[in-house]
Image (cartoon, rainbow, N blue to C red; front, side):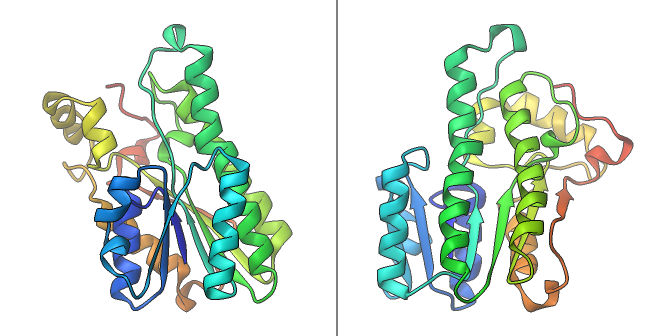
Length: 243
């Protein structure tokens, strides 16, 4: 399997789950130091480290060449790499916009296309990390919201075109306590977010990884083209947090 953005946060938790299950796990991330300390970096037998930026087509192509050379194919992609820039709509710069779309949407497209071509030989599963922010409005995140909505639509299109041999789904987390979330929010803001969630807490990366594990499993063999919300009930009333 391959997980992008797998050196920290949700991606790291996904890699760890599959390593525990005995899978061979390739982790693609642009942070070389974080890669070395990741679960895949500590498992020399089953971990493959790929230092690359998903916005660089040549680097992505090289990464897939390495995977194919090492393993002779790919059966699972967790398309997880992403960034978030918290900014009001009027203060969002064109650089903010372009950077977010390049990583979250164009990068995901590039990686998914390469993965699907490898999987066309024997079949496989692709899971995109989208967000509940792609389903409901979220202030201060115009660019991020647009990319996650795009991933949801990309999931549907890929599922239709790649069936029956490749299944494609998306997970849509709400607030999850990751390094990226901590970098953007103060403790007071995190506490306020938790108070708006029916389960009264933020999610853990391991909980998202567990959902990904199910979607990749034979038990989900009849599941494709779907986006699964995992947000502690926050969006159940149709309203996102205004924090």
